[in-house]
Amino acid sequence: MKPLRDETIAPAGHFAAEIRKGQVLRIIDVEGQQVADLVTINAQNLSEKISVMNTISLNRQVFPRVGYALYSDEARAMMTIIEDTCGVHDMLAGACSSFTNERRYGVKATKNCRDNLAAALKPWGISWKDVPFNMNIFMNCPIGSDGNWSIQVPKSKAGDYIDFRAEMDVIAAFSNCPQIHNACNAFHLTPLRAVIYEYQP
Image 1 (cartoon, rainbow, N blue to C red):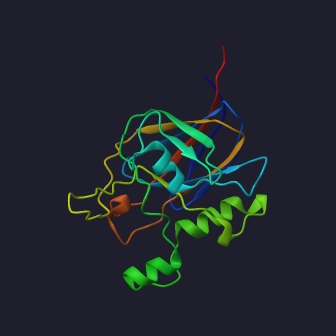
Image 2 (tube, one colour; image 1 turned 120 degrees about the vertical axis):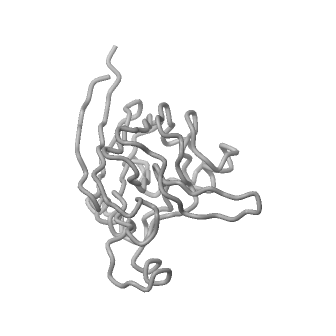
């Protein structure tokens, strides 16, 4: 595979790029136990965005794994997981925001993923209100037999990665999650790395 872009994203930072059909986005957990909040948008039609509910229902699976496709609100595959060294990710938690942080933890004006994603997508004219519900890479949110749901320390280790192959031209954006008020990032923020690959025969 031929690398086209290789970028380290600082703790609490964000990333966005246009990825052509067939190209691969690799997200690497550099030091371990760091979450990335990922969204995808059709680069040719900005009104078509990732749909978590379509993704869960069309895959018939809550927990992402190799072969799992991210589906749009028009029920089209946007990206597919083709490699994954961690195996534990989340589709339910959404992105933290200043509002949810204040509601849950009583803290105001905090750094958060919703603001990060809006900042990452600003060059494409996508506003805060138009940021879609996201997938959480490396986030560990088990569901109990009684339906109980919780945020636990990530299981990702240093160097773990996940690869997404673009099934259409997409804008992929993610927040290097700045959450420190729950176990989401093991209470310690670290860098992530994003690499865009192109298959080379």
